Every structure is written in C-alpha cells, then in structure tokens.
Image 1 (cartoon, rainbow, N blue to C red):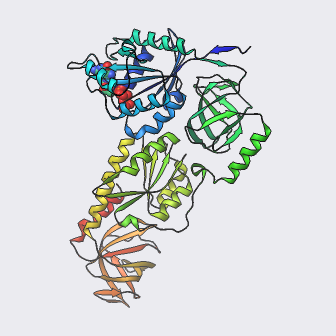
Image 2 (cartoon, rainbow, N blue to C red):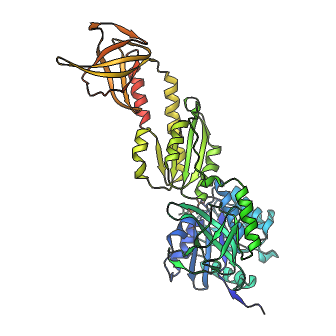
Length: 510
Ligand SMILES: Nc1nc2c(ncn2[C@@H]2O[C@H](COP(=O)(O)OP(=O)(O)OP(=O)(O)O)[C@@H](O)[C@H]2O)c(=O)[nH]1
C-alpha cells in the first residue's frame, strides 16, 4: 500500500499591478507567529514557507506588471491554489483577465480576494458581475470559486481567508509519496562565481536527496549540495519547500521542469543531447573580436545587460525590447547572468556599448579595465530606474549629435621638449589641421585629461598660423605642460564650439 504524507499547499498570489498582493502576504506574515525565520533567498524569489495556525503554507508572490507574465506562467506550473487579488476600488483589469485565463485553462482551484474593502466608493457587486461574465462564479451561486472580501489595512476578512485555504487544502488532499522520485520546477537560476550554476527548486512529490541525479530540459548533474531557505546545508529537501541546488552542468532557465533519475540509459541520452545542443547562452562568454558598431553614433544605443538571475533578466529584456522613445532605440548586444567579467568589458568596448548591471555588486577587480577602456557601467536595483536612466542617456546623446561638433584635426604628441622656460609638445598632425586659435582636448587612453587653448605653433623655430596633416610642429598650451608622449590631441575650430565640447565631456560622465 502506498503511504501518503501531508505537504503544505503551494499558494500563488496573483492579480493586477498594485491591487495589493504583497500587502496581503505581508499581512499573513505579520499575523502569524512565524516559528522560523524567513530565509533571504525566499524573499528574493518571493517564495515563502510560513507556519500558520492551520499549519505550514507555501506562498508564491508574483509581480502584477504586464512585463512579468513569465513569472506568473512559471507560478501556474506549480501552484495548488490561486489567490486572485482584485482591488475593490479598481475592479477587473488587464492582468486580472490574464490570470483568469491561466486559472480556467489549468483548472486551478481559486479563492478570489476582493481587497481594499476599507476604501470608500467601492462596488463589490460590480466586480462579482464582471467575474461572472468571465466564467468565475462564486460557490454561493453554484460555481467552484470561493470569494473573500478582505482588507490588508484593517485585517477584515482574514479569518475567512485562512478558513477557505484550509477548506481547499482538505478537499484537495494535498499529499505526497515519500518513495517516489522528486519532481518539480526550477524557480530561479543564478550563476555563482565560486559554485557555478545554482538553482532554486520547488517540488510537489518525492524527497530530493543529496547525490540524486537531476535532469532538466537543458541541463543535468549530480546534486552536490542542497541549501535550505536559510542557506544551511541539508541532506533532504521535502516537497513544497524551496531549496537551492548545486551540481548542474549549466544554467537552466527558470520555469524548466526537473526530475530525478537513476536510470543510466536516460542519463546517457540526456548527456548526449545536451552536448549536441548549443551551450546555454547564459553560460557562454561572448567575445566578438573587433566588431565595432556604428549604431552608437546613430539613433540606437548599444547595451549589454548583466543580471543577477534569470527572472531579473527576462523581466528587463521584456521591458527593454518594447522600449522606444523619441530619442531613439536600444540595441541589446548581449545579455547574460552573473558578475561583469573582462569579456563583457571587451565586448562593450568593441561595440561601443554601455553595460547595465542589475542586482549585482560592483566588481572592484575590473575597475582598472573599466578606466582603461572608458567603459560606462550603470548599476540598478529597481527595474524602472533603468528606463529613467536610459531615457536621460538617449536624450543627451541626441542633443550631442544635433550639435554636430566639427573636429578640425587630430595630432599626436611625439616628444616633450624643454626649452628655456617653455615646455613644448612635439606633435605630428595625423588628420586635418591645427590653427592658432584652436580649442584642444588632450586624451590619454581615451580619457580627456585636459581641455583648453594653445599658446603657439612653431615649425623649425618659427611661429606659424596653422599646421596641416603630415606636418611636425611644436605646440605650447595655455597653462598646461603635464602632457606625456603618445597623448592624443583633438582639435576644434571655433570659439562657439567650446560650450558643445564641454557638453561632450559632461555627457561622457553621465
Ligand atoms: N486602503 C488600502 N490600501 C491597500 C490595501 N492593500 C494594499 N493597499 C495599498 O495598495 C498599494 C499597492 O499594494 P501592493 O501590496 O504593493 O500591491 P501589489 O499588487 O503587490 O503590487 P505589484 O507587486 O506592483 O503588482 C500600496 O500603497 C498599499 O499600501 C488595502 O487593503 N487597503
């Protein structure tokens, strides 16, 4: 006889943006004397296992913005019960409808939580009618869905909500068999510098054990270690409890299913197919040699995205691919998971890109390279801050292009000559020309080290008004002589350009 054991129900909280999903979860957390600390990792991926009066419950909180639909779809794959949160003062909205389609298509047991009932001017009946029209009918009217009126501000309706969760858990008989192999989904995947691919998993059946052989759609490996939600090493992971697994060969995508097998044939077959496939993009360091992109000077902004985990990456890509404004478009040159590395810097340099790093710490080891190549790296922790920054960068870039600053010529310092009380730069004009009233930028390793006017141009000791391409001449600068051999000169023509040149410098330091 198969012996079954209880496991906590996995409860998804979904709904339209700002309808109060997180507030509802916060209320449940603060109301329950949580017998154990809530792990950091679960907070990061928004999976919480909470001890409540009716026993342990596992919640998955998903963002409500349209860009996060992949996270909602991922949640749908694993949840036992759905809490559909609808704000009483807003009613059924686009993402409410999206969630309803998942519920109906997947026949997910549902509790509708009409939230914010403490607010004035609300019309609950209207929401019930809207839901009726979409096929969500209350059990009171012969349907299958439970309804709760709730306020995370006052706590009204909380008891009924908990009772409804208990009712559904009992009806659904949420259990698992100990002796079956573990099976579930990858909730999140992270590339760790030292440990390699790490995945956060959640299962509904079997017990996952250290040493098990795990297979996902795109990866495989022996489970080397299991960490619980408080980052403590454990030997077994029970169903409905999130855990972190180390041991997969490459980084799978979040949402991929995993299963455990000891069948040698299956393992061999999987290894064969994966080795035939192209290696996962997220693990591959792309190094495009000398491929320079002209788009930067045009209307497109070249961008390299580095994210902490797959979920972050997918959300940002979703938003960026739709991002367009009057200042131009974004071209995503490459995207990958994990810290910024030297290949990212080289790719950035070769493609004239900027790097957007999300939920990552600054890699101090790369500071020298960053400086050397004059790379722009922007760190973010809130997705919408990325858009704000990109808008600003693109606006300034457009302004810079509009100003059409004309470069008169280029020169290179070949010698440093000391003569009486003067220090003269022995220069070779590599392109265009230099004039007596020219404005100069001196660059070292692509970084502007000085800007200003020249004092004099001399050719064989004689002062001249201008020097053209191919000429060697001696130049002195106004109040500056700390130049080095190999420093480069960018030469500009008119006085009125100074303001524009200043704006180039400022933009370079956005
Ligand atoms: N008056 C009132 N305000 C509420 C209630 N629940 C949430 N709010 C407010 O509604 C706003 C949105 O709440 P969140 O819990 O962040 O909403 P969310 O659905 O998690 O939002 P996303 O994660 O961005 O989709 C916040 O300002 C909350 O304080 C409620 O029951 N009553």
